[in-house]
Length: 514
Ligand SMILES: NC(=O)c1ccc[n+]([C@@H]2O[C@H](COP(=O)([O-])OP(=O)(O)OC[C@H]3O[C@@H](n4cnc5c(N)ncnc54)[C@H](OP(=O)(O)O)[C@@H]3O)[C@@H](O)[C@H]2O)c1
Image 1 (spheres, rainbow, N blue to C red):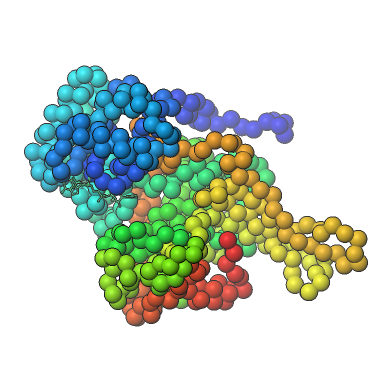
Image 2 (spheres, rainbow, N blue to C red):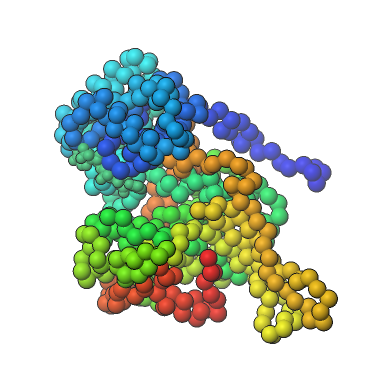
């Protein structure tokens, strides 16, 4: 083999070349909900516009309020006008798409509703001649098990003449026991390869690009380990508050809302070993190995390995905003964390001794999600600086949102002939917007299409979900005892509590200024 040749993996050849799925019917449970209106139906419309949906594709929405097919269609039209990526609405394209949308009114716990659904599916399928079914649980999580069981009892979990799959939204459980219980219930009526646990972060192009960046380029992987990397910082900052979802957030907190799923997914993509192929299980095997290698934080260490925060009132973008405890459906003395910083280690050969710092919070100064790889200093400080400080280390930052891109920071000589050599950090920058000039598809477009294609690479497997909860569980256990910190401890519009700065400074490091 010459240096120009790369080994073509025979398993990879031809994969995903064909991106049009087989005809199928998508049944959305929770069809009048916020997720359906803001994300699912707009994503389906956008897919249909670009010709990615098959002929013979239908949607059945199920929810509890009575409405006709035509009322449901016009509700969905309003949602598409407001939320679809492609604007303005194209009336003829909408009419063609809407002709195959149906509504099924039922209570989720009423067996009669599933008989009605079965009849509706039979009718649609007798017209289209195809028997592939995709269920989407876009309901409050307390209904996930109920719907799965009812589908099982109604004989709707498999079909002789086609495939049947189920997509489960987040949150997937609220601790290890409830996630394991939900897995058991789902697996009592579906097989693992029918179950698609969604984490919409994985549908983002920028997140998938982590794998492309690492494994389709020859120059980064050789330095992607403990010998060259000092530490890694993962930041998932939001400037918004809880947006009226106090009831949900009080029970979740940032650890369940962001860390257990999205942050640990980013961690596993950034830290995983190269998979042998780009097949779903090969990728997920490597991701789960990372989660299993994360050193547990036992309850007795939870206080010192994490910093919790909760926002008080403050100012964001010139606007006065309320504190968390003043939000609707939040307890006046709430102990729920809206900010979390933690440090973890991955005990394997690649990462031994490299700390990974993760921070996430609400009502921080800006919305930004990034993974920053902080490289070690050169072995010898050859160039003296005027103030005696060390030159800033190289940083590779992968911005997931909103300003999607990758940049590399390095030191450069400041031009001039002065006696003292002056070095300043500069950046090599790649931005999606300027390099490609096209808007990335919404994460839900990608994930809906993949689930219709039977490609589970970007969905979370049972063992991944449980490994993530197994890491989070002892931390939340440790928090209940001793007493929670005195909240609120950071002002809205700031980068979290002072303790978070002290936390990382104790290791001789500092958070990136974003
Ligand atoms: N919203 C988001 O952006 C978002 C993002 C990520 C994940 N998720 C997850 O997605 C799921 C859905 O969230 P959502 O915000 O869309 O919820 P939502 O707005 O509360 O919608 C709930 C839906 O379920 C239906 N429903 C509730 N109880 C029912 C019952 N007993 N029988 C029949 N239908 C019933 C409602 O129908 P009626 O209107 O007829 O009552 C409605 O269509 C949740 O698990 C959430 O965590 C949401």
